[in-house]
Image (cartoon, rainbow, N blue to C red; front, side):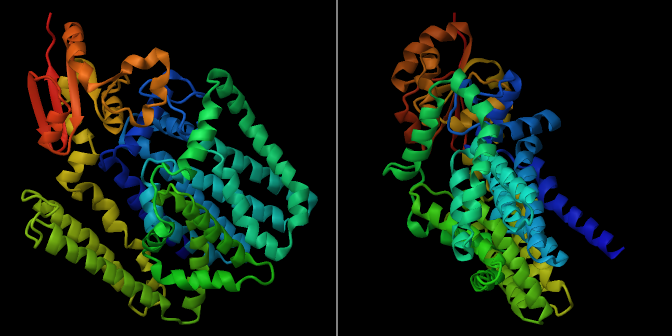
Length: 553
């Protein structure tokens, strides 16, 4: 009966954290609008081989991620929940694999259950796992690969070993089809410290080719299909997306070597107090089978790998949190059984975090705050109050962890609950009017629906318009962005227009129907710099400006 109550509680909290909020937030550009639109176009066209974005060839990522999102759209329909469910589904499976591996390592049900809970409630995991990007999916396959390798390494029969390596290859192959060849590199470097310490190279060399064969077999049909359909795909994907993007001086998202340290620290909340002890326990677990050391290598090696790469984003270190969750769970359970104060220390950290964030909102960001230009406008008092409430909930559960009743130290798992339920309602208007184009698109839906041609100077906004209006013929004005490669094909040259040519184009094409130009600008001067012709009507909200040009015979 007690287990049933715990199960119901966990499922309820999971639903409140991961499922309920999905539908109540606008899509963010450029990431969420991009992947929502690519999946919509794939579903509409029925083309499972070649990804298209705004009807343009889009070779930045392989197809497996879009397959997951496409199935989500097929099941749940055209809505925000469907857009984000693929990420939630992937991170949930990663949590189940995390619990499975924790139990496989030490046979402790409490550690196994807590590992999954810690993983799902880590701030970075939650943030990325409810956001429509590809990282939760690649993290799933990398977690599956590391679980498969451990299964193979601990198997006692030849069949068990072979099965583990075949599963390893399947996971790596799916990872390649999700985000590229990093899915091969990350598991290899992750197992290096443990394999060297345990001197397990003989088995790896003997059975490794079976993993390679398995990976090749699962990727080969799609690899051949896309090579036949688009012969330039593999050149572009390998050279541009893997070499130039990460290693060259002009790599995207350049950042210093230490970039990931603050994200690892902040991402471990609300379990930050366990982080030092968990990492230390991993280092101390080098002897014997080295279970904890295996996990430590899985944390440290990818972290170093992504730190060395010039291009960095916080989402890249998501795969590090599965092993980190297991280490923290084992450390927490051990400390709780020994009567240590570490869980109370962790409670103090969360209480302080909630109090500091609440104070920042109340005294600086709110309209009544001390800041000269507060983030919240004068008419957003309710949003500021709800933001304070969200962080008050965080601090409250941190406070609850300070009580000496057994198990209360683990109540910090509920710290993110207020943020999860209220985040969609507390985003300031200035952020909405810059990063969430749907709010503005809803305001100008009828003019856009009446338009024969729609132009925009932002790829992310173009994706938002396409997804919201269910039309992919959005034209690019002055900015090609990530679609520059797709626009190089001769059959789509007309999808991009320079501002200097717009007046002449408009004079000719407005005979065919109404033309709308939706611009993203930082200030009024930037609007003038873009030199659009005088419009029949102009609508502005924040950084979004819509210029309407009526049809003329």
